[in-house]
Image (tube, rainbow, N blue to C red; front, top):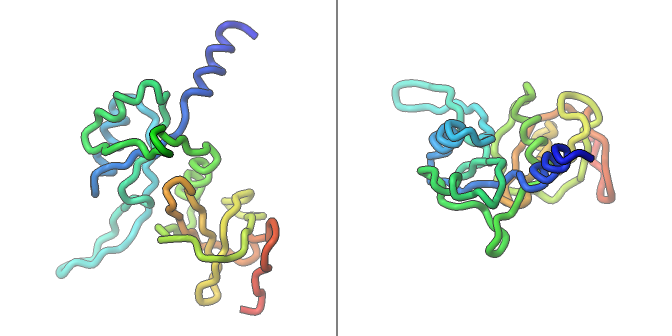
Length: 185
């Protein structure tokens, strides 16, 4: 391998995704500031309709309130931490805890898909499933049944937060051990 290839490989190993804990309702401001600093930043949003006394409006809200994802070399974290609105990097003990790239890619696929998604407070006990077809084919999650509709829950384990996305019943196949979904509902 050439020196250039080795340097690229080492850079990829040190540049990881991290969750940034940010001030309440400052997610979009932090995202804009980090983007202006040329940082790779990801703020997953969903749309919701909010009713005020005089009108109904569609707004974009963070899927993970209080968090923004950023990909950077942890040894150069001072630039990220110096961003207005950033409280800290989510840590495991004293060290910043990187997030698996696969988890970020799964959330990016959900956000980019035409399917409705929304924050989900926690994982319900249920079947582990894998999407076999559709725009999220290959993703795994926990499945719950709500009024005859199936919804897939994707979790960012580090944050203990999840995202719920509506799916078609035919798109799901069981994975791993555990109970199989009740097809009669």
